Image (cartoon, rainbow, N blue to C red):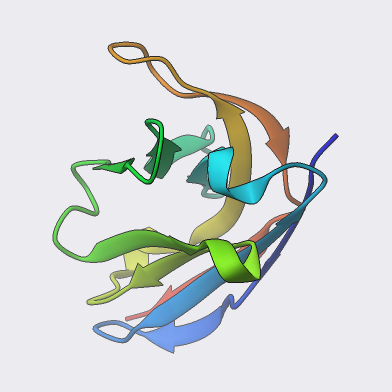
Length: 125
């Protein structure tokens, strides 16, 4: 079992920044494959970014096209925490953001298995 707790959401004006955090427990954090997803009202949950373990101290990051160049996913293994730094926010980034732990294999999409409770991000125009 993995427990995930997100924090850091809030209300921000367009062009502003927020940093989301996801504290994880229950497994060896440094070996977790993790990601951020979001769900806007009336829409399906969508991929935002992943940070996956490739062995040793190597991690790979991947991003949705809609957030490339604006969002950065990173982790602090000493704090068992995953982050999502969001810059140049747009109203269309408004959504509930979820942290996830899942399975990853090279060449295959990330498959979430555990979810946090979500944190609301609202970007005003």
